[in-house]
Length: 406
Ligand code: ASP
Image (cartoon, rainbow, N blue to C red):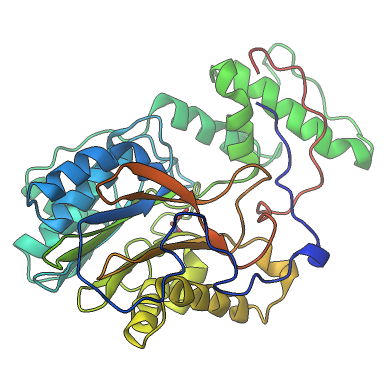
């Protein structure tokens, strides 16, 4: 795998695609059809694709819509290889995994949420337990963890060895003026020497590669590990489910932004931002730049837009335009924002919309869908042409060093 800086097409090609102008083939995204009869359908973020079959089976056997949605999102939560959700999620800046989740159960019109929860893997289920076992809507931090334990959830170490080593690499990469990283007694230590400015960034990246190996990060994962250190990733899963009776539920779960400040909650546990469901209308959820989504109450905005007659596609595009408006449509800032919405109306019409096409050419944000035919992933419709740029901004990456196994 090659490390390349995520591309960003300049302003000449960053013109908005008019809402409704581009609709993936075979998608109901552009539908403005009158609301018809409800049907069994599940939509999710692209990382839910592998879990749609089992969730759809549950749904078609008459299972509850929230249980079906949890059947999808617990997949990445349980998967130690997915470092953006649940077990194995990349930790906060202190090396502690903190998880966020929220859900809405349409039939009973209830909501549950947990934020900054440590040591509990399936926070999606904890959010559901908040609905069923408390008179509250949102629990955070230590209180949320203690509640989960009281509900029978096991305390687990969520930090996998790989995620710990990536965090360690990130920690050591900050400065040579602290005590993290090998000291001068280490074999191979070299006294600081002046490096021409043009070489400084290249050297930094090369040192990261070398140090990743020393820390024992698997060579075949080295490229990805260095990328995660240079550009702390986000990653989340949302799922909304509808059944033929018209019941709808939605859920979103995440480990949030890698290396965040302890206690930081993004949009995922915020009902109305990371997820909102009103089965009189529909359901929506979000992945991407949480701080930006909170400011436009994205999921709620989308459902309200549909209530007032917009199609799922129009409703999602409008929310994306509100994010652009937050920055006065300033592309110099918006190129660092990444946002995808997954929208499901109560007649089964759906849309996946993104601010940008993806992170780099060839990678397109996707919505995963199962409506009884088969589980499939469809490219989202984008507001802007091109790819978001990674944050923080950096000089260009040097040519990839020789990397065993890369
Ligand atoms: N929205 C999540 C957060 O801000 C991250 C993501 O979806 O990628 O925590």
